[in-house]
Image 1 (cartoon, one colour):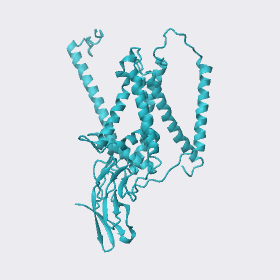
Image 2 (cartoon, chains in turn yellow, purple; image 1 turned 45 degrees about the vertical axis):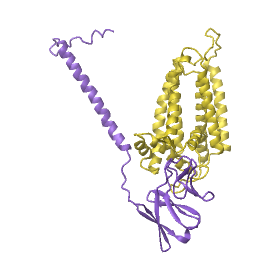
Image 3 (cartoon, rainbow over the protein chains, first blue to last red; image 1 turned 30 degrees about the vertical axis):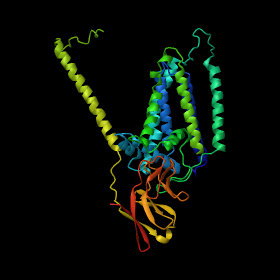
Image 4 (cartoon, rainbow over the protein chains, first blue to last red; image 1 turned 90 degrees about the vertical axis):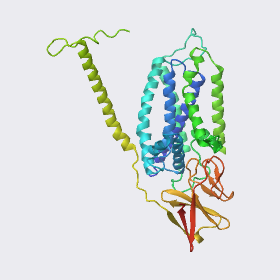
Length: 280
Length: 165
């Protein structure tokens, strides 16, 4: 990539596009959440969307090992070790992910396989379900909107399509500007026998979890802190994933305040810990 | 719910006569079992090699019990270095008063490689700010256990690190 002509540009576009994708997916997810668009009958759309977001994070995680730089090496060590914390299945899962006991060249080829074949395959499947449902069920309308109100419509072609094209143009230009003026660096080559460098941190979308893990004490009651911390994130993610099934109010057309409070709490938590992770 | 009318109808036999209802049902059950079983066996026949292929093979590792690090003069006082001990990193520290100590360099929290932090006089993990004192004991941050200790032997001016038995 460093020798091929415009290799830097392709790499940079890839990295920036990946980051913007996660950003767009996160914004989309929160807008769907706060609008309660996940409510009946769109539970499956929400579930497939959330699974695609998790998979997107998986793409990010498997992708940043591939340059085989310092961040890649230690992020993969930590990430796969986190998988190893899961009771019973953890250790075999970690060995499966790493292709052995340690992060080595075997891990690299495995992650490459996940990144370019396995994940895209699953993602395509989920995306098809997601889009078919959006197409079949139409856009969700905000709660409390008068059913009898006059709907503003426009023809898909050319009006809506031209709007879409305009947005594409803007996004592609932003991407080009970022890739050219802020090229993604390759970093320093990974050395399995070097200490983790000071200031090492994961990509911004994992920062809040990373920072939280720093504050978890070694032991809480009879549990290892890391097991508890990772377990709590897992449970929180599961509760969030299942929101259409426990938020019964919005399915009945009521706008419960609790959902907004929980959502605001989560956003504030993520923002605060991301900022702390960035600056500390 | 009524079953489909043709579902339990007698099946015509090869001779054209209707086979009794029970015999038809038995044959149907047998076919279901054979097809279902065959399908499951087929899935297993495909999945087993795939899983076996993805399972990392056990590598015969040469067990390392000691590693020569170098000459005393090459290792400055109040410094630390990572030593390759087989496939594992080990941190060798020479304290300010010239004493040698060695520990596993793998942080007990989430597997990062630790370093000697001269200004604080501790072993530090940059990943999640875990700290260990110079006896390897976890003293601050998230690490749940102390670092595994190794033995250091100085023979003449040669420094070696050994696994504790």
